Image 1: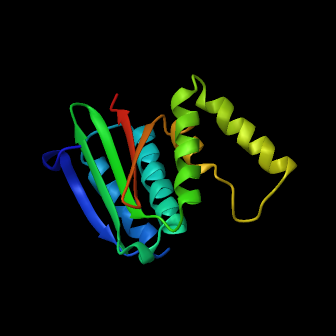
Image 2: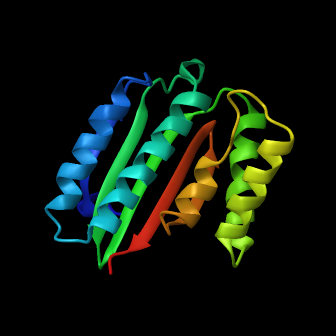
Length: 161
């Protein structure tokens, strides 16, 4: 995503209370773009899930205490990019593994359902790890990532139909 394509760019303090502001700003922006209710809801969900992950797994210890959030539409595609410092390599690897599974799958709905079944059989309080699968399945967003210098950037994009 080029800087010219970004319409919302936020530097967010990683607190749970910021989620409402992200949702409101995302909704306000996307409603002005004359898109379907389905795309509005999917974009808000995607933005929320990505920021939630950044809050959960991010770290101020890396010297990057804020979360960077960018949202824009360019050439009929919605782009969301969230960057944050990572607490440990295991968290970064976990996110990368989930995104790679989504990228390689022809059926994100199957991944989502499999993860739900795993959670029902072996629940782990506070750790669902459903968000990325939800983004791909329910939101129909394509996911990608970059990881450099202890900064994880997750990118999501979807065509505006």
